[in-house]
Amino acid sequence: MKLLVHLLTCLLCSLAHFNTLAQQEGRIETDRPDQTECPFIVKKGYIQAEMGFNKSLDGGQLEYVLPTTLLKYGLSKSIELRYISNLQGSSTFRFHSEALGLKWRLMDPVGWKPRTAVIVHYNFRDEKRDVSDQDLKPHSWSQIVLTLQNDLYKNLGIGYNFGVEFHENGTAEGIYRIAPSINIGKKGYAYAEVFGRLPNNSVTEHWFDGGLAYYASDDLKLDVSAGNSFTNSENWYVAVGVSFRVKVVGKQVGK
View: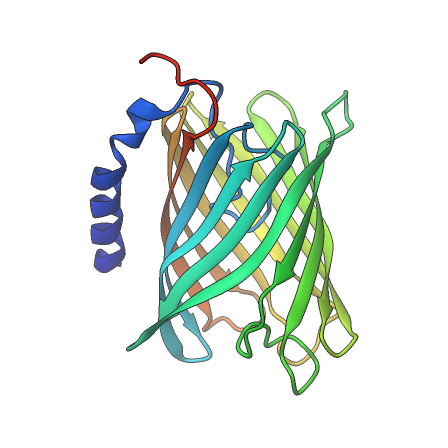
């Protein structure tokens, strides 16, 4: 954990100048730190990076991800482009290109109708990707996830996802993620979450986790989280993260 904190500190120092370049147009919205994807679209003309530094125990194997990265680009008011990668390992590390896709805004909130978007990802081939696939070739090739969010009473909200992941052998799995949250002051929030896949099989896991997030500015967000498996109590993870955005297309404000 000390290694993760040290890396995050170094990264924040190197990113400090980005904060003066970004246009202040509403607060950054991110898909991390929870597993539940948010329905917000990155602002048009912005690049947004969401980076997590993870330590996990999975099947007795201690692993680090330094970092996992989600890069987004706001193509329009309704569409963002997405690229996911990570640098993962224990004694040796390997770079993975995870997925490429987009998020498309479907509906803004009206009354009890949730803010809604759909995410579509193409997963790059990786033999170690998906141990929940019921086949000798553990590869999932695409995901479609409906992401929704409701603002509840005062400072409470809830995000939830329902989706499907398609496998190379013709099978598919359902995806569920549910994350209620509560605001803490004007710059922070806490969340709890359950997530997993259906149907169950011998290696499918269901998890619970929780975390805290803090907005250092409209364009810079910090987070910490931890989770444990319901299915296998020995499997856990801890993570710290940083997310930031920079306007790359269009006139900068405040220069």
